[in-house]
Structure formats: structure tokens, C-alpha cells
Image 1 (spheres, rainbow, N blue to C red):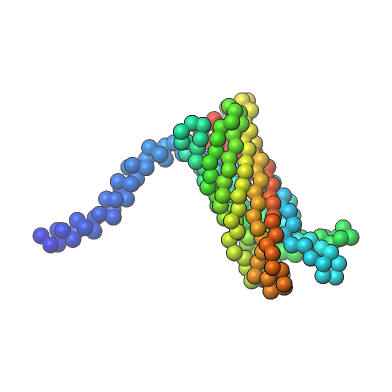
Image 2 (image 1 turned 60 degrees about the horizontal axis):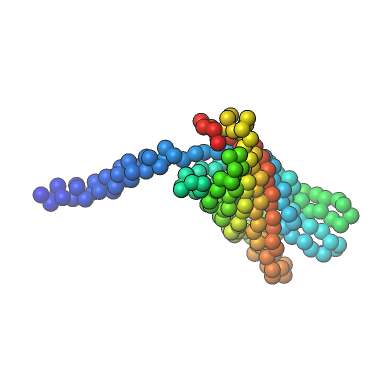
Length: 209
């Protein structure tokens, strides 16, 4: 009797997972997946005056994103977004010259809400975290960097001829406050507000937008 009771208890996690999967199945059937590819522009990460004024910023970068959306009460839907971009980070001097410092990748995860504004237009607000991944631990990244919280606004445009193919365009802009331990060691005390703007083509496979 006791061994049978123990077996039943051990089955509970499996049964709970199975029940959760059954209950979640209708929701998964409503989830829409959108992929996007485009370019991202970033503002200055660091401005300094050592030996003359210079800025450090990421170069224009290819950007890729995956968005999952779940319909709520119309015209709202919940969204989860993961995106990635990579480019050189460059030092730009006051005389117009520039040089690459290292390769820098940026990855973000965000959650938010989307609202249908017009049949061909929707707007989103999102919050999440951003992480920088330098190819080398040097300069302002020599001690790594934390996760940076960000806020983002985005607009999706899908004209009828493109919408029938699941295609559209997205323009997004986000802001975060940037500082690293290496910068603090060098005497920087205030985080710098950094903006990023991205635009690209979107595709929702299997269904029109």
C-alpha cells in the first residue's frame, strides 16, 4: 500500500505537466510568430575628452528579431520579443577619423502589449533587458557589463497587398542607460542614455497579419 502511494506521488509532477500541456494547447494554437530582419542604428555609448574629444558607438548593424504574439481582448495582444544585432564598435574622433575597437553583439528580451490602430497599422510598447557581448574584454568592456533594462516603442505597417503574403515593415526605438564597471574605474559616475533605432521587413509564416 505504501509503495503504491509513493508511486502515485512520484507521478504527480508528470501528471501536472501533462495537464498543463493540455490546458495550454488552445493558447499555443493562437500564438503567432513573426520574424524580422533589418538594420539598427545606435547613439553614442561613451563621450570623452582624453587627448581630444571622441565618441564610442556601435556601427550600423544588421538586426534580427523573433516576436511571439497572443491575442487578448481586441484590439490588444500580448507580445514577447527576442532580438540580436552585431557590428563593430568604433572610436570616432573630432577630426572625423574613426577606428574599430572590437566586435560587439547586442541581445535583448522584451515583453509588452500591442494595439491594432488601423487594419494596416499596429503599435507596441515593450520593456525588457539588453546585454552587450564584446568579442574581447578590453576598454570600456574589460570587466564585462550588466544587464540593462530598456523601454521600447514599435510600429508595424502591413499594407493589404503585403499583408496577404504575411509581410510587413516594423520601425522600433528603445532607450536604456549605459555604464560599465570599467567606466566607473575610469571616473565615470553617471550612466549615459543610449538610444537605438531599428527598421526592417517582417514575415508572419502561415497566416496573414
